[in-house]
Length: 85
Image (tube, rainbow, N blue to C red; front, side, top):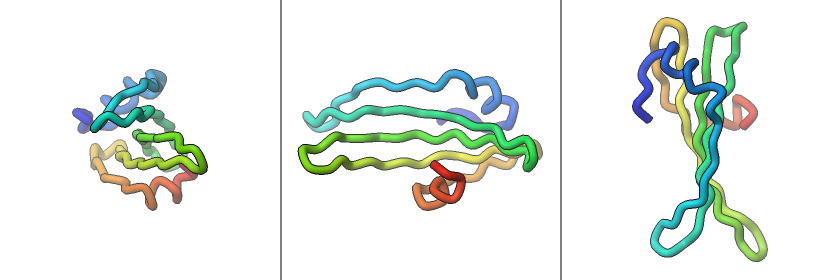
């Protein structure tokens, strides 16, 4: 993700997208979403990679948190759960 500032993250907030991709001959759905948290002056941008399975699916996610002081923090999947993703 080539975003580094709060304002850059704010510009893509409403550009949520999803597309099907193939990795090593396996089909996945790639999605990204963003949310703004005005009370803490933060924006979270999360990316998901999901694969549907016959019995259960697999998913992987990570993202970044941007604040108004332009601090960009990496959020692994566990940290995204804390934000409710």
